[in-house]
Length: 444
Image 1 (cartoon, one colour):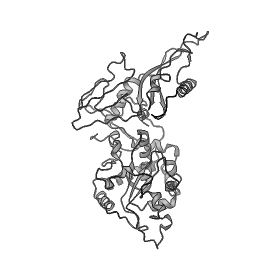
Image 2 (image 1 turned 90 degrees about the vertical axis):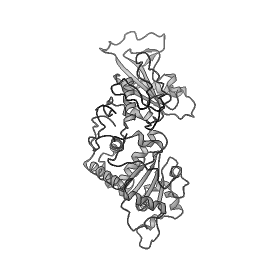
Image 3 (image 1 turned 30 degrees about the vertical axis):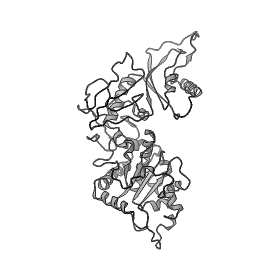
Image 4 (image 1 turned 45 degrees about the vertical axis):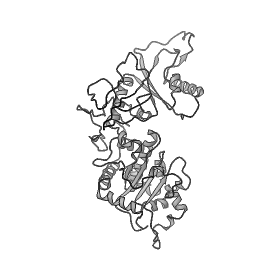
């Protein structure tokens, strides 16, 4: 996502559509008269009658929850739906999306303001009476009445779209054209999902022509949406870049291993062995001989230069790192061509954003492998202290066990900090060369 030369160019239609959507976000977003009017309408509990036309400004609230990867997938999916239906996208701030990422829309915010009238929206679930499925089941809304002259039924003030992992067949009728015809006239939609629902949007016939113009290459949807939406804030980019510089940048090859098991699952030596064997078979890690066994009688010619590997292991369970088998193999390299070298570990945790108001805490950081070779790779820094030109260090917050969030591995490409604007020195800014926004907000 963050390579300087992406290789896959967005279509001109996508670029123009994004410019129009940015204008919509500015015209109807928080702080505007249109948004205040829409809030009052939501408080009143009323909406326009079906078939009388959509209001000028419509809204989609995306509920952010679960891990960072889930939140990224959910936000990308909600954004595409907002673009297709001309809705303002507002993301739930409860999981710090606004502090993890730069504002994607110039001149406005995508963070839902704290005075949102639906105060309990984060508790919406499959049982919520205002869910799309429940309202269809209870005949509060009826897709067959859409456009009928005889229908004078008023639509609800909002609808809740439940597309979580436990969504029922009735919830998934969201992907039907008839249901979309009803939803398009409801001004406020609140969506919960922990998945990537974009493939489902391609099933809606009303969206297919537009999606074809936006994405002539359908497999590039997340690539382009991700490059547009998800630019880490200066603080988060600083964590990523400093970790990359200290532990990964010098390696000839970087290997990431994610052990995706839930914290309640028992430790599995069989899974660990499977990961190790697979990594060795695919050439990601060197094959090993058991300690004490002789190496091959006719070793291959020595390479001109020994290649180094940095291995990053991420998991919800520290046991898989502590065993070290996938990241730091023991024994004798069978071919003596490459030696894997342990460089660090990231856990599936959130980086706590920099608190700007009177927070004097320190980072409490343990990075395994930060030994004598890199004694200054990680340090404790007082809140607000500036670090320009300094050795790798960290800003205030609290991270236990590791520096790097799991999903941040996606950004450890070949930009060793080139995308981060330093707080007190001129530096490269985050740019979206193809898609238009020039830099992070100065408020971050």
